[in-house]
Image (tube, rainbow, N blue to C red):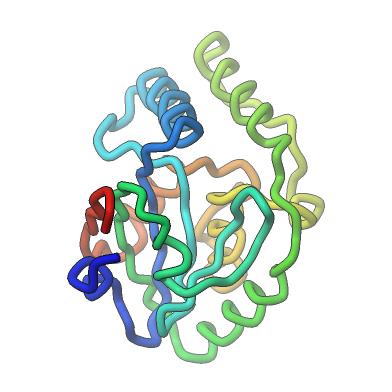
Length: 197
């Protein structure tokens, strides 16, 4: 670990979205599908991401990963020594809404990862390519809140306190979420974590 890298992360009480570009085989596979979808929709191909987490303030991060939804510190979430780039967005909201969001997010801890949405997202992307429009096969609304994939979790969490944040948080992939963040949140910084840090 490198204290210089970790010092770049926000340490205050504010809420942040972390959009992650990692380099594992799975991350690169997800980014490939994100790239294909962005091309099909003629959207930006810059900074393709494959993962998203939510920072609840004071270095507490929660997100949906392979073992499910669990809160961690920033260092334990990203301290595996792997190279990654993290785009940081600040969520502006009143303190009472921060508490509502924190309570909701922490109440999701222990829920399983929604592995089926890998298939659902691939189907959605293929439908976009061949039909020119979207079609979602997965769960919707409250039925989608039993299990989560990463960007769905973050979009669903923020929709609890920002009702118009996303119209369909259950099918938001990492690049859908990044587009929403670019339009609705405050971009703060980009953190690059090199191998071995």
